[in-house]
Image (cartoon, rainbow, N blue to C red; front, side, top):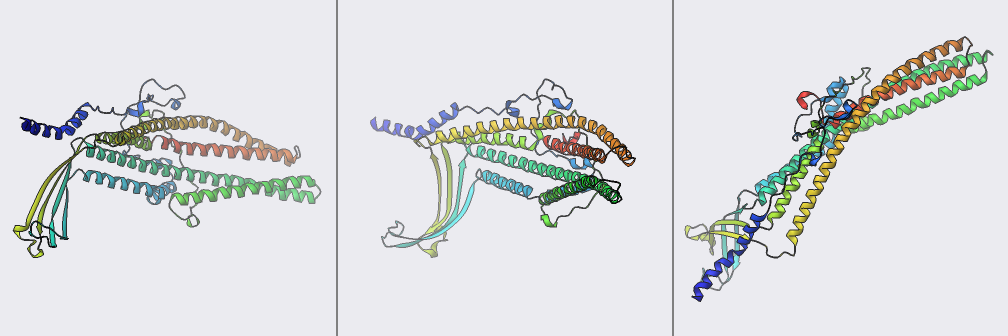
Length: 482
């Protein structure tokens, strides 16, 4: 009876680790899926679009990082801008680096998927051994082997599938970041180009004023030589000419820097990059006020943040599977012989099947620490997603508010420019007739130039802010891309 009882207890003792693992698997609870938009209540529309409060409600949309963003730059109706954006899409180094990181993530996904498939390999070898039972002698003998090996890990508790799911989410995050980089580069090209055209236009305004000042200097100099004007008038006019020449040089410096920035964005050497002059004025596109807040779902950076949360969630599952046993099935078949001449004979064939179950019993808290670390990374990813959503919503609100206020500034400055130019014309007439001093004339001219430059800068701000709004909403606002 003692012998029978002993034989009965031994198999149960061997299976005790497996039973304990199954109990743990049954007690393990699935992690809750992360809330959409990181649990943030978002309004259905943007408040700044109409200048009022946002309606009560919650925006809801699935991530759409792979959704086409549209050729939004075509709305500016500037052929040179479109050509520059296309060149940057092909040659920009940031886009190329992001594409390489995406390719790396895809290779890691393929590697993770490959771990779930049987692994087959061939092996061959020659060994010198002593004491072989097959030879019946203790004398050294040479043993040759050749065959195939097969191994397969049974994914009983989802370790490999969770690893593959995490790699898939990493790949989606990299794809979203590539879209984000491409959109960022397109926006940078558009903003730099529009600023360059603004500087060129501003320089033309200043050069026009410089020509007027130079004509006035020549006229004043002749009048001084004829005794009809004071030397002070010549000195004042010379000061205006020199100060305006300084402004021209400063604008030329800005123009050179912007051209060099465009060269880098399009992947070219700054010294070799040239941009033809253009007299065409880009069209300022108007983004409708009814763009819904759901466009945030297709912002590449928001999609990347959500994919990072999903990847972190999957890695928590991977860390939890470390508490469960792993089962490895292996098989091998081939030939083995102490005589190389007999290696490929049928009588030298050999094969084997193995099943290995492994479960760490004591690891000093390593598995618990890894699981805690995975959960901490998940919390960090959720917090990062929340911050990204809040930042995205703020970006759109900022640009909408800025555009609304710039429109008001543009209307006011249009009136100021008209009045300043009228005042400059009247001052010029009165000065020629001797009714006002040269100082009053110069002041009127400076004011007219200042107002025209202010109006140009506000107009440029409207263009660049529109580009920033397009970037903030993730691309084109057309119906097919929203």
